[in-house]
Length: 222
Image 1 (cartoon, helix red, strand yellow):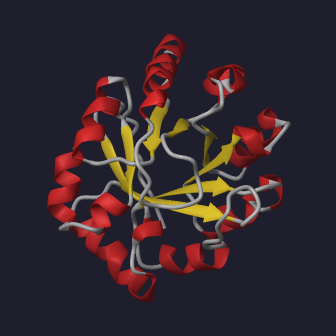
Image 2: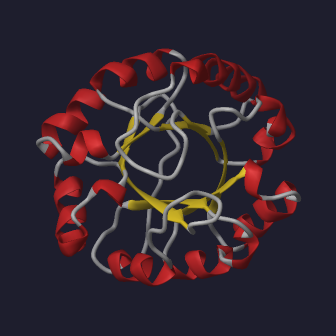
Image 3: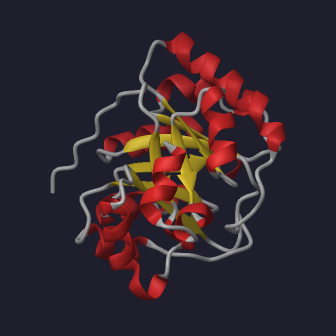
């Protein structure tokens, strides 16, 4: 299956988080958001240790890969991500994001993801300093800033992360590379405007999209 990803940073992309989808009809939900204009599918992987919730694993990803050509943005909110990177790559992930807080040897993991023919991302929680990832920004394809505490959908946007988004955008621009800046948590038509104005170019939204009419919700974010 050929997945084409155009790195056109000038364009804001919307990545609905299937954490908020109806899992009894997950395949249909993914097809519906694709028709509604979704650019990516954001897949939240939680292990009940790094975050207080458990979601899905590589088997589910491999099943939904068969029914969608959308770009699969896999967000690993798990301990010991090095044990599972290869499994998610084989399952059909196009991009794998690891958490800075969950691994010590970040550069080795980033390199491992890329060797598996996946794009690599690194994420930080609301309370984590940008200093934790400064040395790795030039090496990844995406930076994910969490604007809620990870683990559950439907939380309110934490406005304290806005300066962090702006700071990371400046660092990215200085690299001269096409690196996406993604924001996840409490994204709706109001907060989307705030994060876009401060440099975000990929918006993850779960509850906002799946609780409304998909096409109009996605359009309002763009």
